[in-house]
Image 1: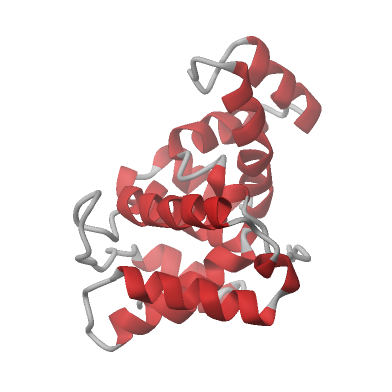
Image 2: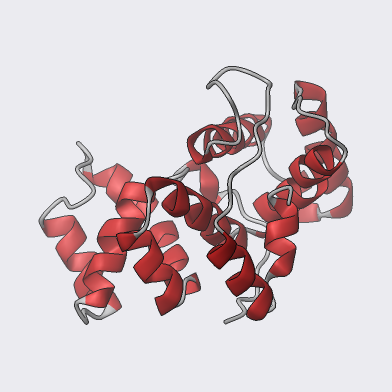
Length: 198
């Protein structure tokens, strides 16, 4: 399933959200329609957030990620190990967020392919500067928005297991299950494995 993506800063309101994605996938597997899922998440506070605003910010991204994942991956997320869930959530984020995918591909993937395990502020700054030169949309974002987005990217790296410590600069390779690698290659999504540094 290909989605037409444009650059977005939606990761600001919706960083990693693996637990939340699992909740939505469970409801999808029970046969609930998207509007029923949205209603249930909000009414029963299934994300366990302490305010409605946060649910409203996170839900669209989580719904989009759940749409990007097919049944094979959905069952691996709900039944597989936490490591599998992290890898597949990272894949779903890349699949639904073009700018983040390019960051993974051009910055993180490149570093890991060159056995460079340090991600520094200048790497992220350079990435955003070059994207702002290529895209009017990115160029129009406020400095505050971009700073928040940089933090959100680092948070995703940390929660996925690619960044060793929350405030650190050291990268770790993900251990990607062979089933995931083979399946991604089979469905024509091999570039996402490459972006994860494989």
